Image (tube, rainbow, N blue to C red; front, side, top):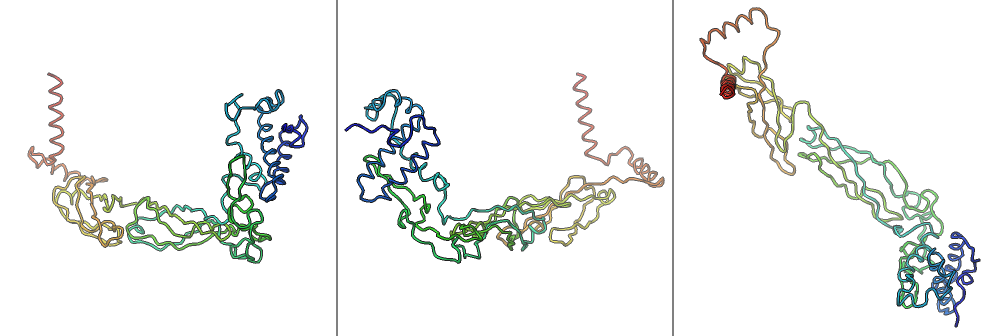
Length: 376
């Protein structure tokens, strides 16, 4: 039995454009689909012919070969690859075009009751709050379950009905030659249920956009870059689907006095020249809001560190604390009075040639040796 002309199969002229060809195909494919014509052998046969004709005419190269040679252009092509044309895999594309485009979606379309998306919130935290912990409130723009329909997506909260295309199975089957292809139902997106009367407030999505205020616990000892998960506080799922999670990313703000180094705290403290030279004590602030006394030995130099045990940061999920390191910065006096300058000169002269600055003396000794090496 001779094959029918592909253009006649689709009911179009030989000069048909791409858009008109596609429209004619979709109309016939929907009409003849096996799911809409169960146990109808004639409809199944015509459905296969329509798919075969469209698979050829939608492709410019195949269509040009068909216009020139007719069906002979593809005789033996499936077995021998004659002419370079193949039909394998073409049906999946045709199926997506017929159903995916028809309902306004594609392969990447999510199921109707899919899980909501996760959300990210960036939170800046003061160092004191990272030490002590804090209960804070954050405001996020998100999707929440629609109160009008209780998240069902149906007007008045009515229950969805079984999908007429898949009869509640969520999947449909299509025959292509010797193969049966099973795919997610494009009408209900695999849910098996459809909404006859969508909710006006949410448009059938079961969720609406809102700003939400949440109370979040910042634990003591939290570090920069810590991610805090708040389960179920992300976007609401579609049509009653589970909500996503909220992830809070913590950034520790710089402090004007302290610098954090893991569980330890570093603090640079200016020390008067007389205290550094003669010795004494100073008071320094601590991260917990208290004060600590530091004994400064005579002859303290800039950069020398003093360790205060247990005065550092809280350690996450622990009752312990790090240490605090006080770094001395010896301050040279300024705006001296005449009397003070005279006293410093007397101090310098009273040394009798003996140096009171060992680091400076050692440095210039090494410089002198370097110059002598250059002369050699």
